Amino acid sequence: METAASDLDSKLARRAARGGNKRKRRSDRKVGLPAPVVFWLVAPVGAAGVVMPVIEDVNWVWLTGFAIILQIVILRINDGRGFIRSKEMRRAYEARRHFSILEVIILFVLIMADMLAMAYSLLMAAAP
Image: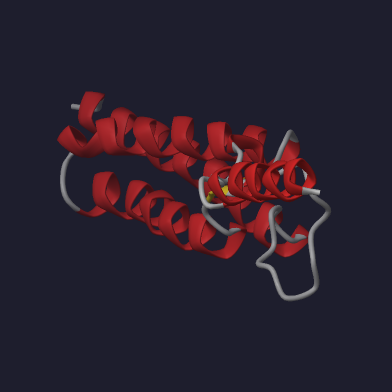
């Protein structure tokens, strides 16, 4: 009887030592920003890429090129895995992982406007 009690005590002691040392697994974490936050960080850069070279000077063309590349990369990420990486299915209370169709259309329009603004400012700088 005494051995059964000591076995139970040692089993409970091992379980207590094991249970207090739990860590979250790496795959359980959600990494990334919600899609609306990413959109509102990228869209102003695209708008500035349209406005700055036309209003200010041709020296702002680098901003337009950066805006085009950034928007293309963000749209590729959106099309692939989304902005929040998780192995779980999205719950109703969680933020969106992908852009809506309206946000995608706005980013495409901004890319085209950036290209047009870049071409216009470079042509105006080259014209005598």
